[in-house]
Image 1 (cartoon, one colour):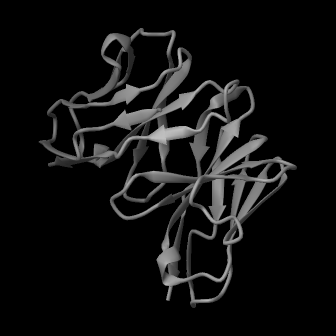
Image 2 (cartoon, helix red, strand yellow; image 1 turned 45 degrees about the vertical axis):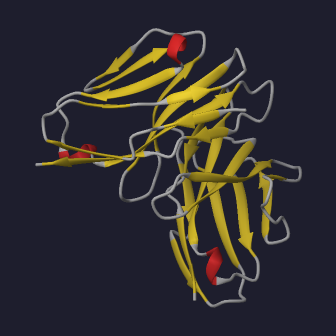
Image 3 (cartoon, one colour; image 1 turned 60 degrees about the vertical axis):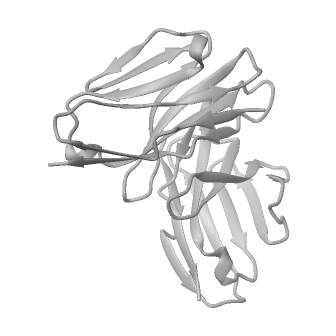
Length: 117
Length: 116
């Protein structure tokens, strides 16, 4: 069965600190996709990144970076020099390839990040 | 691109009434849309998968007669909460999958339903 675990329920940092949000997943599929979404207080989920199971290259986008390691089934998310606007709930999610099912997303429980000024 | 809207953003209704929530893909066609429910401080729970022109597929434990889903066009899916009760109060979020980017779902802003 597929499962996503975000062990950190809440994290609080001071502005400009770096912070890493952990995500561990379980799947029997060889082809799958991993995602990170941000949910600010307004409620809307904002897509941040998608990574497929064949691409372990780490990615950097501005202050955001992602570390995908298949050996440990982890897809961690790091925010460098955090800002107050980064305060939100962050969800890690997993989906199988579309060819095998509808591509449903399995979400982790979410990590609430609070960045204090 | 890949913008999804929902209407209404917030609705308050009396117990026993039905409420319709619309989900639209504004700048793309979505053959598949998803409906989620989120309780406070919890994760998203998939309720059903909506495919254009066919019946929705409901997740286990979700009453299809209670939560009616219609996906009549490639840009519109609706969720109707029938005979709503206070326990149906929740945050309902839809998402749409982009054709050609099949494994990425883009989410609407959500609808806050409060049943009195």
